[in-house]
Amino acid sequence: MNRHLVLVAGIPALMALAGCELGPKKIEQTGYRGAGLAQVIDTDNIKPAGTIPPPPYPLPADEGPKASEVYENVQVLGGLSAERFNHLMASITQWVSPEQGCNYCHNPENMASDEIYTKVVARRMLQMNLKINAAWSPHVKQTGVTCYTCHRGQPVPANVWARKPVDDPSTIRGNKRGQNSADVDVAYASLPNRSFEEYLSSNPKDARVASSSAYPGWNPGVGTRNAEDTYGIMMHLSSALGVNCTYCHNSQSFRSWPLSRAQRATAWYGIRMVRDINHGYISPLQAVFPANRKGPLGDPYKVNCLTCHQGLPKPLGGQSMIADYPYLRIAAAGPPPARKRRRRRRLRPQPKRLPLSNARSQA
Image (tube, rainbow, N blue to C red; front, top):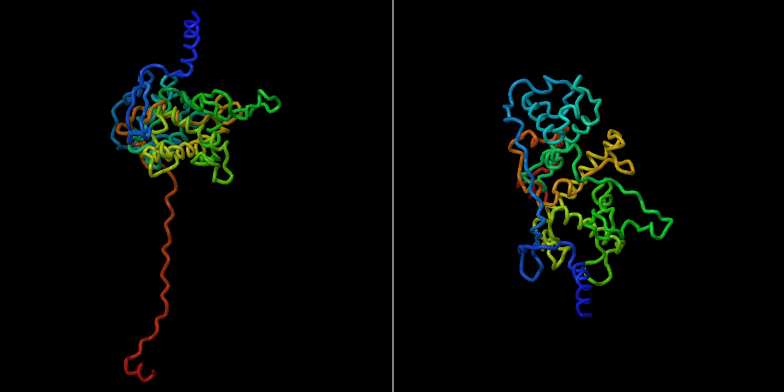
């Protein structure tokens, strides 16, 4: 009898030790055996790639009067033909506000007006989209991005973040020092949960750990908390892409770049691309966004890896939409690069060569 009771009582404990991810797993080896280079895939929870909507209508030829000649207040891609510009507008409506329509950004009485804040935001996001496709190809490769990559038919992407209020330092239970809680931002670990502010914001810090071995750290100024912060942002990357650590790293040495997979370099560029988006395009719009589009501390909602990837190693399962929207791969607008002035080489005076007979006489 007692044996049965012990067995029954032990079942919940065994389930807790097994974790919450029950069900079949699939293991794909990605490197040498014995180094843990494998991806453990929870086959019951693989995120769908998502369905890409077809273009609103076939892409028109880029000919005829330009958009800047036909419409007023066209500040981005005004060099497109008016027909292609209309195609772009119809596509953005489909990607961002399919239910609200054009009026989500435009005043129907005056389409050129900037009085609706969403039009100002959309213009800046279009510039951001062009910048990503032109300058961040080390991360987005030839797949590129469109507004749909993040929005998926919603005015606000599903996965965004803002700064969190600080803990209450007046009580022991309330002051958790930014950690010690199961937080979704760090995959429900008790790691520091302000990783987005520290690594993906306007003033980011570099990921650092105290030591690569079990011995005391050799990196001056870097302590255990830095390592915890680093593992917090790594947990976010892992869950945002739906992969294990060894998708990028080699378990022989997580630090070593020569041992790492090529995916680590792609992720390195991705982190810097997210910083560029948040710092250069979203944070400057703080005064434009209304209060209901900001976080509890008044900063606008920003992006992280989950905003685009949504649980997949590649957003939308790696499907590219650029072929149907080639105008989004045009080089980002900006001032032309300054021409470098060529320095003229100053000629040094050369000693006058004397005839051989004169040289002998002078010697």
